[in-house]
Length: 367
Image 1: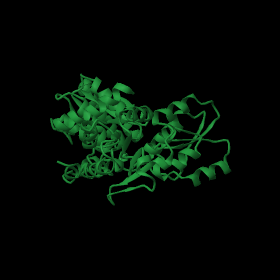
Image 2: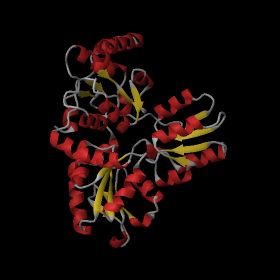
Image 3: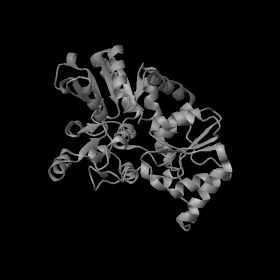
């Protein structure tokens, strides 16, 4: 069953939760956590709401949390507070006896949805016709299990924003060219940092079904999938220029899912982990404008009152799909477990799991 078919069957949150106070919900969640003990494990992604992060047994990025779930053999139920592709990865890395649950099945990822397996298979066929057997596929972990499996069976691998440079370097030892899915900005920024000029990068448009490139095909090294993060693409050079004018002492740090122009204009760029660690190590009194998801920026500001931390885009909304998981959905999923029901279990079929794990393993061996 596809993700869209799954969410079409999602029930609405029962009305009883709207009638409960926040404190009543919090008390029930703590009660159920205590009742299940080590049988229950709740990973929480950095971009989740604070009200959800309060109950997380671990906080991290998507792959880190999936690996922590994999290492936790005591947990029978893994209630993943993140989005759909993250829960898929956790399911693929954990054992058959463990159950991965997503509190809200509508918590998807617009970036991951920008590369379907049908689009990718079509593009691969067209690119093979144009360029022959010279391409290795890489996919950001922010992609569906089907896309990870595609990379696995075609000799490719997954990448994270932390290890993208190492993985792109490895890919070029395997083939002359790479196809980078599904985030064009991370692919472009990574390849450029490794010395690949923009003139040797093309963009595959899955909607128009065409390769956008004006150069000589023999010179082409990187094919970028036309996908993006709807949050990070909203940071602009104009915002940076305004900040430089109003507060020249403020350091600007952004995620590499931002556009090439924004990354080049910023003072620093790096993964979520890099951003967190950079701010953690910064001197008291320093000022930071951060180009990443708002829930994390607000949390960093609360954790480091000795610094002045704001969003590069102060009117930015939190990630809409990450923000879908709230106290109501978390409590609902836990009370369903308490009643013996698996609430929105995420299960990837064995073949997809096998092929996707090839892509994941190739990354883990080198990163």
